[in-house]
Image (cartoon, rainbow, N blue to C red):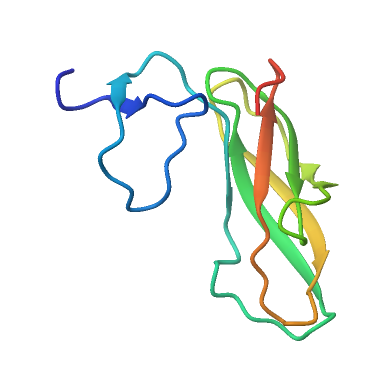
Length: 119
């Protein structure tokens, strides 16, 4: 436990990619997480195009109650459609549609809420 099974000691166990030097603690909770499976931060599409989004989410130590995506850097959020619930500790598939911004650069955030209403 001294060097493994540690998470960031922050409210949502969040750190930026490649960030170092943050405090850690032994795993004492599992936080909700959501991921894209068909787009990356480098995805470029035709401006104004409809873009189907897909991904997976997990509620941490309980189930997934909602997944939302945004195409305006989190100013507004759109509910995703959830796939079959496979149980409290399982990943849950989700889908959504987005309209590409005028720049054609699609970098939508995604967030997950678990059944305990923790984001």
